[in-house]
Every structure is written in C-alpha cells, then in structure tokens.
Image (cartoon, rainbow, N blue to C red):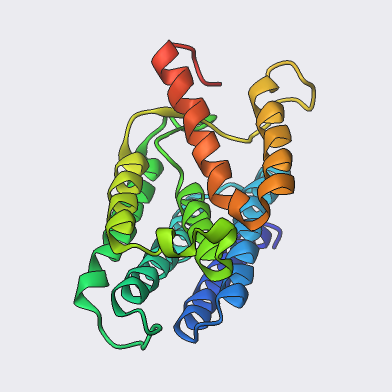
Amino acid sequence: MKKWIPNALTLLNLFLGCCALVALFNQDYLLAIGFISGGLIADVLDGAVARILQVNSPLGKELDSFADMVTFGVVPGLILYILIAEGFSGGGFSGQLQWSALPAFVLSAFSGLRLAKFNLDTRQSQTFLGLPTPSSTIFVVGLLLIWHFNSFELGRVVGQPILLYIVITVLSYLLICEIPMFSFKLKTVGWKGNEIRFSFLGACVLLILFLQEAAVSAIILFYLLINISLHLSGRKVS
C-alpha cells in the first residue's frame, strides 16, 4: 500500500489544479493562488516521499506529468488568458471567449512538450535542461499578484497585452531550451556542493522582505539570471 502514498499526493496536485481553474473562472484569484501553492507543495512531496519509501514506479512518473500538465500547464495559460482579456477589455473578465487572449495557451502547449521531453530525457536527474514548469507557473502567478495588488503601481504595466505576448514567447522558449538549470535536490545538507542553492534561498528571503508579493516573479527572474550567467561563463551547473 505504501507505493500509493506518493501517487495520492500526485492526485492531490491534480485535484488542486482543477480547483484553481474553477477559482480563476470565478475571479477568486487569491483562492486560486492558494490552490496552486497547495499543488506545488504536493508536487514537491510526492517525489520526496517516493524516494524515501523507495517506491518509484513508471505509473507514478506518468501520473506526475498528467497532474503537472493541469497545475503547471493549463492553469498558467488561463491566468495569462485572463490578464490579456482584462488588458483588452478594461472592464473586467467576463468569461466570454476573447480571441485575442487565446495565444496565452501557447504556454500550455509548450508546457506539455516540456513535460513529455522531461520524461524521456535521462540527462535531467540532478539538474534541469530548460525552465521547469513549476517555475514558469510561479512567474505567471507573480504577474497575477502584481496585477491584483497593483504592486509598486505596476499593475497596469503587467496587464499590457503586448508585454504578456512577449512573456508567453519567452517562457515557451525557456521551457524547451537546452540551458542547464540547477534543481533543489540536495545530495547532502552541508554547504559544500550546495553553495548556489543556499545562496539563492538567502537572496529569495531578502527579495520577499523588500518586494513582498512582487518578489514572486522577481525570484524566478533571479533564478534565470543565475543559470544563464553560469551557462555563458562555461561553469557547470550541479
């Protein structure tokens, strides 16, 4: 029975992703973010629990991708769809089809491609190649937070459709690119070998203290900056 414990967490991720979709349609954005956060926690725990219990299975791997496709593929696409629709209408999200906002789901399509590639790529056991789908989703959630709270008077800026089209294009590329990016899987709990990870986490705390909700997207930008800098300098990501 213990092999179903991580699968149950994966299904919880899928369930919470579906709940997030409903909350978004009902314009309850903070509740949607709560569901997404719960899905993210479940996604982290299912793999960790599977490793602890030593019950990794092909079923769990495939199930994880299906769950991630909803929570970290369809959900961010819908968030961007809503932001673009709001940007064009200026009168609030009506729930009616907005053709100009449909390109938002290009990100969902590339998220699916990313997840399929990840399942087949044996090079991504300790590091990632390209931006992980949860990181892409966190960035999009950060945009929603900035727009919702009008953080630093940037709400109107992040709601500009042109900017959002650019975000979709860049994130879609980053999801499938070959740039190595560090993961948060710790081989040891010590500083040696984890310098980048612990330094990044320390910087995240500072960003949250100074930027509050606006820190969410900034953290992913910082993560990208570190990995791209390491890649361009020829240093190996481990």
